[in-house]
Amino acid sequence: MILIDADAVPHDLASHGSLIDPQALADETGWVLKAEGLCRGDVCRPLLGRPVLGVDGWIELEAWADALGLLVVRAADVDVAAVVPTAAEQALAAQGRAPALDLTDVDGRPVSFDDLSGRKRVLVTWASWCGCRHELGAWQEIQDELADLGLGIFSVALDDNPEAARPWIEAASPSYPVAVDTGFVTAERYGIANVPSVVWIDEDDRIVKPPSIAPGDDQFRDWTGIESSAHHDALRRWVRDGVLPASADTPPAPRTDEELRALGERRIARWCFDHGQREAASAHLARARVLAPWDWTIRRGGIALEGGDPFLGEEFLEFWQEWDAAGRPGYSPT
Image (tube, rainbow, N blue to C red):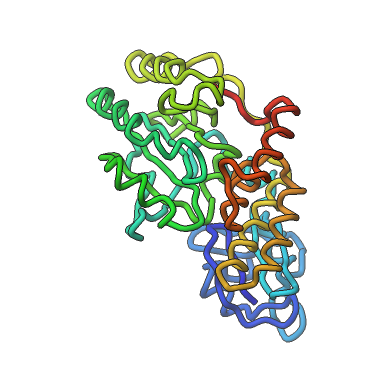
């Protein structure tokens, strides 16, 4: 079985149906079954009477995942499974603090969001399938203006292939870190369903402004209906005077288990596309769309994944009209 973990990393594990070799699972994920529960490092999750062992002492995947607060999304047709946190587990883990992001840049070199810890930070997400791919230079101007006051910008491209993001990164040549998140873990951990979304994090690693739509400039103002200056002026006030906008007090609706399952389905679809299983990939991407109909990283990003036109293609225009008629859910500006 291929198990795609919560960091979107695939592991090839010996298995029989839903039973997995416990040693292989421990070696790959770090979670070891002990008398006190499932343990990784200094952290142990008690089983509270839940049996996780099946035939021959192998671990039952669903029981193992349940003990860790994970949902399992399965693809029996290709023997692939993905795990994602439950909504309750994600809310418990966050507690207002900025989740860790250990990603890679366009050339595969490690890039960590925690490297900017201890200062005011802005997480800027974008994608090659969005007009915001043109805005890296605008964020460079903001970085240049506010860096001496302690601001650090960290940019993440939500793209399935780093090469899709490369031309825009190289054209802008930003001085701030730019990661390419092919597993979309940033979207999962920060509740991002559309781009360009930004998140503000303070010096104590607390999320002080949850995700909102904030274009880097006004190139697409007629389409977005948002003036970039509103966000930039609010950002300047926060960096200089510590003043947060009123919108910072309005957290986004938490993801449901169904929406999180959609992210698991998308990861399976990505794995299937990468391994030539196009029919299975399209089926899992279709399931993801049903589970999370307003998630642009799935709907519009999925068009790009399947090789369609995410800008002016018929499928995108139909989705945009449907989303616009529904009141643009999830599209909250600063």
